[in-house]
Length: 332
Image 1 (cartoon, helix red, strand yellow):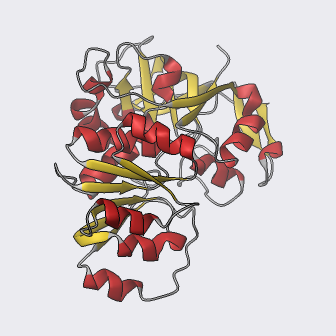
Image 2 (cartoon, helix red, strand yellow; image 1 turned 60 degrees about the vertical axis):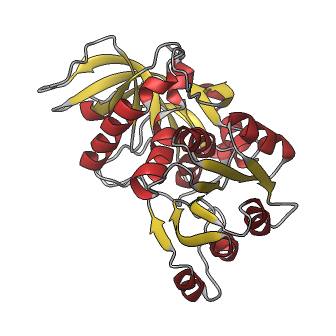
C-alpha cells in the first residue's frame, strides 16, 4: 500500500509517498480502507522529530481517518460488517491506503456527510468534547475562552460550547478568522495581534473573567490567561504552540483566583479511555451532525488535497492560514 513517509526529520520537502506493507488486523481490530485523513499539528511536530508516536503505534502520520471496513480481525464483537463506512480516531497510521483500528474506536458516519467531512471529525471533535465536558465540566451560562478559535479543535469547541448553553469567546490572528468563528456561534472574537485578549475578555465579561479557557498556546499566554480567568475558573492546557517556558508568579496568581490548571493529551491516552470517549461522543454528540438535527453541528473544512500533494498541505498548515481542517484524500 502507499503511505506518507519521511526518511529524516525536517521540513515538508522531506515527505513523500512510499510503498509499505499492508497491515493485518489482529484480535478485535478491523482493517480500514482509508478514503481520507485530516492533518493535525501533531503530524507537523512528528515530521520535525518533536512528537514520536506512542509505544506500539504506527510510525505513519495521521491521527484520524474515514473510509470503509475492508476486513474484520478475529473476535470482533461489534455490529460492524465489511463495506461499512466509518470514521476513526488513531494514534497514527491514517495517512496510508489501509490502517488497522480497534473496533471500539469506530464511529458511524452521520447521514449527509461526505467521507472527507467525516475525516475531519474524530481528532478535533473528540478533543474539543474532552476539553469541554470531561475536563472543563462546562455548564450552561459559562463563558469559555477558546484560543486558536479557527483551528479544527477551535471550530468544534465553539459549536459544542453553544450546544451546552455556554458563551464561546475566541482568539485568532486575522479578521477573516474571527468572522468565521462568529458565524459558527462565537459571541465575540479578539485579534491577539492587535489587542490584549485578556483586557478585551474582561471588558466583555464586565470584569468577571471567563469560567473556562481552552488553551493550545501555553507559555506565552500564561499571564493573560490567569488575568482573565474568573474566580474558581478552569484553565485546560492541551498544547504548547507558544512555548513551554514560564517566567513569573504563575502559582501565586493562580492561587489568588482559586483557579484550576488541567493538562491533557489525547494521543497518548490508553485504548480503554479512548473507547469510553468515543462511546460518549457517539451517543451524545454524533446525532447532531445529521442534517435533520435542529442544532446541527458541522465539521469545517478549509482545503482538501490529494495525498500526493502532502508537502503542499504541510506547508499550508504551517502558514497558519487555514480556518478549520485540512483533509487529504487517498487514492481509491
